[in-house]
Length: 490
Image 1 (tube, one colour):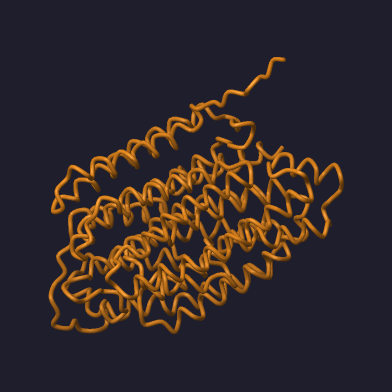
Image 2 (cartoon, rainbow, N blue to C red; image 1 turned 90 degrees about the vertical axis):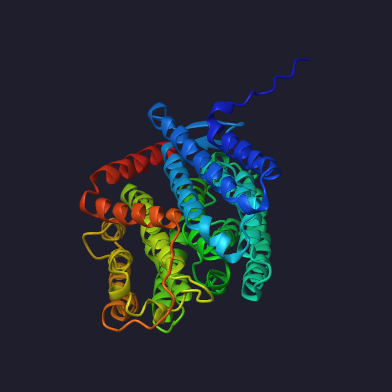
């Protein structure tokens, strides 16, 4: 009896293989680098991430239609490629933000960069997962790395508290996600999204109680990383306690990965349950953006304010998911690039203000910045304008696409709520601008930013403006991404 074993197409997981080799290689190289020169590991990680980003981009031309491997459990399409580029960009910027920061905190260790790359590897697996088990493996690879990174400054009590809270809630939600996967298997006999969709359609399971419960549990599982209500409680404490470069990283990259996985599961695997999950996400969307913006008004700590802002932005991005059309996926894809530019830039300015014992994470730490560092103040205003969705910034274009997608899908009242929330957001964003431009600086030591931080701020500020004034190239890529994604669904 001849048994044929399908041979997977390893070329489709080329970026993941390279990331794994780079991560393990850095751990080996770190053994031979003196303790006072660990910056070299960071530079090598940065070069490796840039190379992997270029290699990933080469897949774009050859992927006119989605291709699967590993018996259909792993898909490579332009949707996955775009999000992988978001992760790699966030990783590169985080490394630049970290080079001097780690030295200032006395925790310049090589394993920091390796953990960040393992986290990126997990996210890359997530967005290409066409099977719930593969997506779960990606989530766990990502989460375990993030837990350690959040508590990397182990001598800092806030850092330890942040990591512990994140870990405990993450483990709890991980169990809920697994239960959702188990119920999906019980209802359909498979965890592979293509087969789940086929069984749901063939047997008419669009209102099956078991599958509806599974849908709720899956939404909860993804909701932790998205930081959508009511699974947002970890975000303020973790954002405040974690090392600031890691805060910048987890505010964008894991959120993007969770959204991409949510879209693939809900749009493809359980698409016929759309009437149920649209009602669920409508409520979550309205509550998330309102809770995030209203609570952000009360914050005096910059990192906590940006944490609640991040929760509000999760609500905005849910508009594109709710729309469940090509414009919605285009808006989500574009918005995550814009969000990476502006949010990581805002956290970069928090790092910029760190000097001596001053963390730089209070709103008052920005007092008089326009007088002492006028260019830094201008850059911060650019990020604030983009976060608020005001032209000519990339944030405005992204928010416009999301609102337009929701209007096209008929969610008029939700767009009204989102617009009102955008007005609320103006108050706390421009409170920062007020203290920078309308108050005199205090006699404090002057910050001395590292070259990596300056380069990172320069890149994200330029991208924020360029893609706000000339959004067409990125919009075209996002549109093509959405088109090929819906090809995979058909």
